[in-house]
Amino acid sequence: MKSLAIIGAQWGDEGKGKITDLLGQHADYVVRFQGGNNAGHTIIVNDKKIVLHQIPSGILHKSCISIVAHGVVFEPEAFIKELTMVKENIPVDSSRLKISLNASVITSYHKNLRCKS
Image (cartoon, rainbow, N blue to C red; front, side):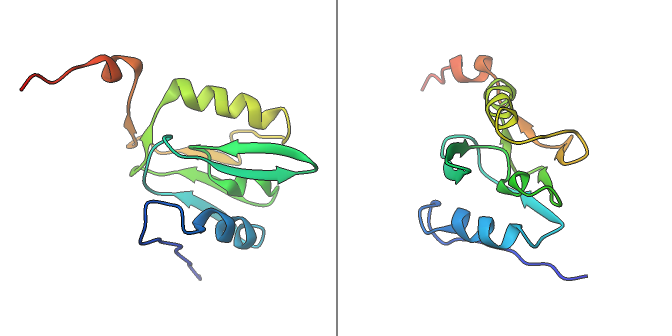
């Protein structure tokens, strides 16, 4: 079994997403293993703009399973919005999109917490 990891040395602006898109069409799985939804990756599919924040770009390929792994900071509300937008353009079901039960979850409650120093 072959594995390929695409890991960047910067904060995401060095083209990891583009390389993942190119290689993902030949992959069985694309796994997002870290980060949150604070950044995005824009992809044009059939002249439609799709912006992914939490969903791995492997979702664009019918033969690929996309996994949101345990190192991702998962925000359910943002994920639902993103998934709705993706489903408007690409068929998605639970056989092609998996979310780790061990992913860190952040909610609006967490965003409203303030630390006092």
